[in-house]
Amino acid sequence: MEIIIQNTPQDAADIAASIIAKLLNEKPNAVLGLATGSTPLPLYKRLVELNLDWSQVITFNLDEYIGLPRDHSQSYHTFMWENLFRHTNIHPSNVYIPDGNTADIPKFCADYEALIIEKGGIDIQVLGIGTDGHIGFNEPTSSLASRTRIKTLTQQTIRDNARFFGTEEEIPHHVITMGIGTIMEARQNILLAFGENKAQAIAEAVEGPIQAINPATVLQMHPNAKFFLDIKSASRLKRKEYYNWVYSNKPEWQKF
Ligand code: PGA
Image (tube, rainbow, N blue to C red):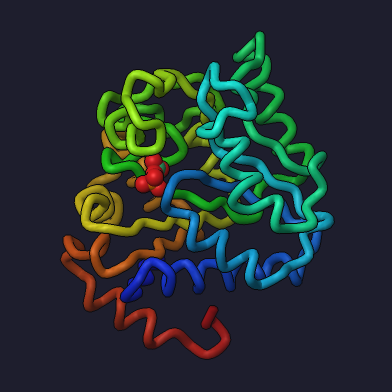
């Protein structure tokens, strides 16, 4: 695991963006796993500024609410097109986002898994983290080997996301999410977390035991996982100085 701590969310997101930009330059048909929520916004802003060539890029989103119309203002379909895709030259047929209105959820999920494999697997998966440690919408006690499937949101996540919907009543209680096993198969995972409200989940994910009660802890088992943090989300890490020391001592060839 690499822990990269920057003063501001934008500083951290800019470094994460440079890693994605390098991938797209080296592999124009790269497969990206993408996330939604407030956290990836500075990353997407920077990626748009970099004016990259997305013409062959394939994307798979982590999750989607069940039952929201695709064009609902809070669907992750809308989020992705508004905040990233419409500012790029990505081909709409290369964009995969779970269909929250599918008639057959288990079949859809199995097909989504098969499609990720068919497209060559995910090169870089972008992740946020919930205040409860969820990645994707894999809530606490999700199997660490889980695959794409339906999940029920925790009441905590519903409260956290009420800010987007206005009221808790409007938030669907069910979602389709890539599983933790699916996320672990990405060749690289880039997790972003900003703000004091993520500090506890981050401290557990980085320095706590691996446990399903905080799904992000599983990333300790991933061979290429990077956490991009601002000083607030990093505030409860005990070994902060060490992570900063490692980052500032990176050999030249290893720098981002
Ligand atoms: P947020 O959500 O970026 O809106 O804080 C993160 C998440 O739930 O994974």
